[in-house]
Image (cartoon, rainbow, N blue to C red; front, side, top):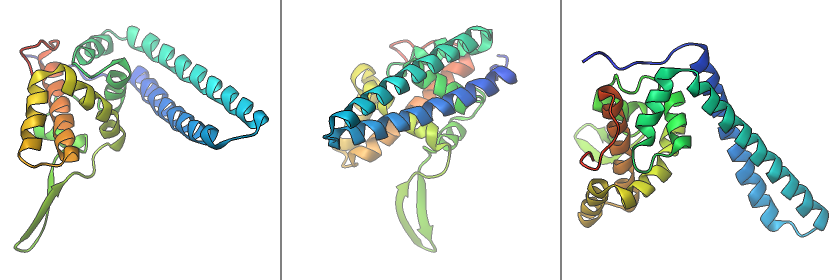
Length: 203
C-alpha cells in the first residue's frame, strides 16, 4: 500500500494559520461570555452582545475560508472526509487535526498518541513507580479531542464499552476519557493510513 499523502505547502500553512486564529477567537468568545454574565449596566451589556456577534461573524468567516482552502486541495478534501466520518469528530475538529497533525496517517499508533500528548507516562524515580499521566505533545490537538471523545461515547459502541470497562475497573473518569481520546487519534491515524472511512465495524 502506498504511503498516506501528507499535505505540504502554502495551502497547509494558510490552513494552520487560520485554525490558530480561530482558536484565539474562541478564547476571546469564552472570555466575553464570562464577562457578560456579571455585567449589570445596559451599555456594557449592549457592547458585550455586539462583541460576541462580531466574534461569531469572524469565526464563521474563518470556517468558510478553511472550507474553500481544503476544496482546492484534493488530498486535504479526501482526508477531511475520512476524519469527518468518525463518530464524534465533526468538521471543526477534523480541520484542526489536518492543521495540527498533517503527518497523521504515516505514524505508528504510539507515535500518533505521543504527538497528540495522549501517551501515558509513568512517573518513576529509582525503584519507585508512580501513577501514569499524560504530558507534552500538541496541547491544542489534545484539547480539540476532548469533546469528540464525549460524543463518541454516545455513538461509538466499542469506545463506549472501553470507557465503561475502565470506569468499572476503578479508573477515574478523566483517565478513562483520556483513553478514549487516545483511541480516537489512533483510529484516525489508521483510517488515513488505509485511506478509508469509518464504518460501524471499526472501533
